[in-house]
Image 1 (cartoon, rainbow, N blue to C red):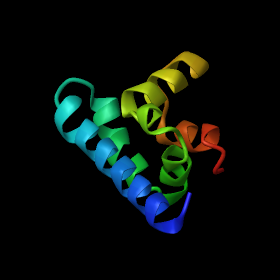
Image 2: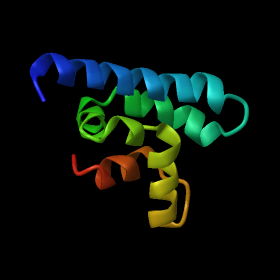
Image 3: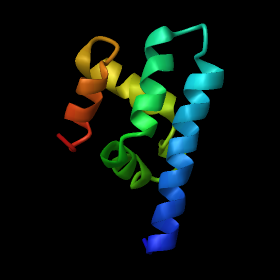
Length: 86
């Protein structure tokens, strides 16, 4: 993936997580509402997410996968631990 494409993928991933927390989970799921901006502002996590195929960069897929793996809603630290960036 060339630099321009990679940069655009990171930008889109950040925007998706911000939208998810501000619009989709607002007043419905405080934990995910809180996680969205933290994930969006973490360059290492966004780098990992932006390497996924475009249709797999969805916040709900990532968070549901981590919830399934951990047996609970993940904390931000657990997201970092399981993203391969820690």
